[in-house]
Image 1 (cartoon, rainbow, N blue to C red):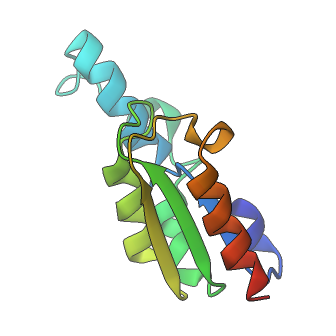
Image 2: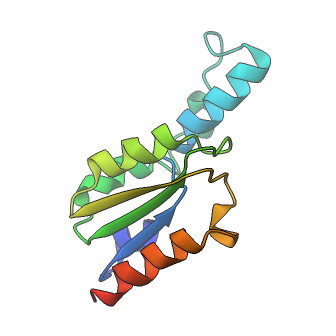
Length: 119
């Protein structure tokens, strides 16, 4: 995604993307340590990977693939990012897809091939 925000690209494909690493890490750590109200992780990690902030300025067509069973990057974070995308966007949910579905899902690869054929 960072590449598409800084250079001219024709299309963008994101697999299991998140909206903001601070939100993602904050949820994971706060669920484990129950410190969310005392120490929000965003205070420590800043906004270095704040993808959702860059998304509206990217105008290239987007294909986003996300697994419905992904526990590393819950699908809501991908949906948040897609909602803010500045160009045409397509979100595909991979049924029974965990975080590593891209290595085994023929359906995911078919979506990618179809998306790239339009170039």
